Amino acid sequence: MMKQMVLDMGLPTGPSLENFFAGPNAAALAHLKLWLGDGHQTLRSPVPTYFWGGSGCGKTHLLKAVRAALQEHGAQVGWMDANTHSPLEFGEHWVVVLMDDVHAFNAGQQQVAFNWFVNAQTRPIAVIATGSLPPADLKLRDDLRSRLGWGPVFALQTLSDTERRAVLRQAAEARGISLSDEVMDFMLTRFSRDLGSLMELLDLMDGYAMQTQRAITIPLIKTMLDNS
Image (cartoon, rainbow, N blue to C red):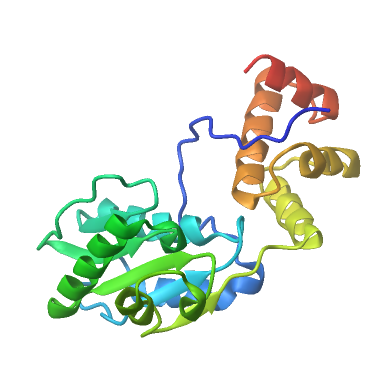
């Protein structure tokens, strides 16, 4: 059986609010769109926002989408995740502080996160953070944990298999291609079930099918992977 995999093969588009498939998370998406505005506005709410949920619910996608939208307009943002081993000093020109997977922050990262939070309050600018648990349940220092829950808190839900299939089929139809039930089953059982990865796989399949002038079938997918 082909091993589970997450495809990150360099698509030209990254996470955005436009390619986030909300499903049961429509309220969270609407909140961020309202906060972000058109990307040019400078008077955004400084109230912190926190998103939490399990793996594959879209937390990191949303945070990276906000970062990309702001940077596209030349704005500077502060970013830290659990893999940021040497965090920067707080930047006076940041327009927002983004912190991903705070549940995994070590003591040093928590200290930096608290420092960023205090500096953000004095500007004032927003802190938008994500974690696997609601703020009250985070195993973090008290002053950081309490601040993460000061503003709106959204619990993100993973899409059901039915919702994943509906999203994939809709995206395929938008490209003018048809996915059989067998191909859909293959995608959902042999690859990462994360929707972002499945959408990347769909883009790769579409491109390969156009290049080879073949319909999207399980043999085509296997050939594509063998040649990648």
